[in-house]
Every structure is written in C-alpha cells, then in structure tokens.
Image (cartoon, rainbow, N blue to C red):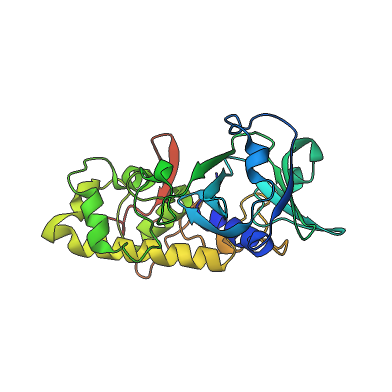
Amino acid sequence: MPELPEVETVRRGLAEAMTGRRIAAVALKRQDLRTPFPERFVERLVGRRVDGLSRRAKYILAHLDSGEALIMHLGMSGSFRIERDAAARTPGAFRFARSKDQAHDHVTFVLSDGARIVYNDPRRFGSMSLVALDPSGSVAALDGLGIEPLSDEFDGAALARVMAGRKAPLKAALLDQGLVAGLGNIYVCEALHRAKLSPRRAAGTLAGRSGASRAKALAQAIHSVLQEAIAAGGSSLRDHRRTDGGLGHFQHAFVVYEKEGVACPRPRCRGRIVRIVQAGRSTFFCPICQR
C-alpha cells in the first residue's frame, strides 16, 4: 500500500492539473470501489471548481467551491492518470503497467481545460467520498486520525504524549493511524534505524523524562526520512512513477528495509539486518545498534 511520501507525490501531481479548474464531466464505469460512491456523486461534482488539494494521512482531499471535499484513497492498487491531448502522465502510479489497462479505469474526471483525470484500480480497494468541510477547512470524518508527522506540531514532546502508557511494540504503535497519521512499514523501519531504536521496544518508553531523548531522536528521524522520500519522488518497489513518468528513487536509499542479512551500514556496528514478523508485517532492523 502507498505510504505518506507516495501519496504526497500523487497529491502534488493532481494539484498541478486540477487546482483552479472546474469539473466539466464525470464518468463512472461502476457504482462502487471498495465502498459505493456517495449519493448524487456525479451531480455534486459537475460544475464545481477545485480550489486546492490537501493530504490527511494517506487520504487526498480535493477542496471544492461547494464547501465539500472529494476524499480519495488509493487503496492497494489505485492510481491516477492525467491525459492531455495525446499525452498521458501518471503522478505517483503504483501499478503503472496495470494503469494502462483501460478495463480497470473506473472513474474519469473531465476538467474545464480539457484535461482528463482517470482513476484506475485493478483490485478496487480504493475509495472516493464527498463530505462537508468545516469552517477551518478540515473534515470531521477524519478527526480520528493521529498527528501529522510533517506538521509543525510534530516533535519529540508530541510523540512522547501519544506513546505514553502504551505497552505495544514501538513499531506497531507507529503504524497505528490513530496515533501518528500516514506512516507505513517502509518508513517506520528506516526511521527506527536512524533513531537507533528497536521495533520491539515498548512504545511507552518514549514518554517521561527518561524517554525524552529517544522521542526527540525518533521524531527527527521520522521527519527527515519522509522529507527525503518525498524529494526523491517516493519509493518504486514495483512500478511507481512520478508526475513526469520517472521512477521514484528513495528505494536506493533504503538502509534496512528488505535488507535482511546485509551488514548494518552504521559505522563501527558489526550487526546484520534481520527480519522479524510483527502483527503480520515484516520488520527489518539491526539488533546490535537498535535498542
């Protein structure tokens, strides 16, 4: 599933094409994705101007001049294809080869400048909904999500607060979208290595005076690894493409993810990267320098 940097890559590509344009037409090839489309979905979109696109966790929100937001989630295999004249670009397509198979084109937005935004989803785990924006521009339906790791509010103290009293392994707690929004398996593994913290460590050990330095180091590691991944266009483990059609490059910077058996690159560490399974997910870390 795409993680925060890949979703942000998609958002930026769509924002360039959609912001300031009106939705001239919407075509649906089916009545649902993972869930049914909202009532009067097409009618509520046609004629609306897209004032901007934002991201909340792994959701992309298109802010409409009607006071509603089109909330989009890519699921496991969703991608957007931008078609203009004879050219097509795929901003952050996670299944680029499949996205060319028109049998899986489920939604098409035609914009006022003639561009077409095509949503393709072979497995149909993605979703689209329309909800009202509150006066601050946020969406009540997403209030249950945790703190954004790229927000100004996210620092060691904030991370310590959400982890306080939690006995779950640190890796599992970081993947809990109700605590920290948008993190996924790849970037949690990488951030934990940067912070020299074991994924097995109890999450609550980041709280209190004794955990302050650990929480600060991890918050900084999360922030830096996400920013670097976004700058690299995300990670292309399969066929992920950036807006210009090029590959994301952050997979070349992986230190631990999918590096089982490789020597830990940290200076003077003689450990090797191991793989364990936590809550059904693969975790990669160095058992020597990550404590």
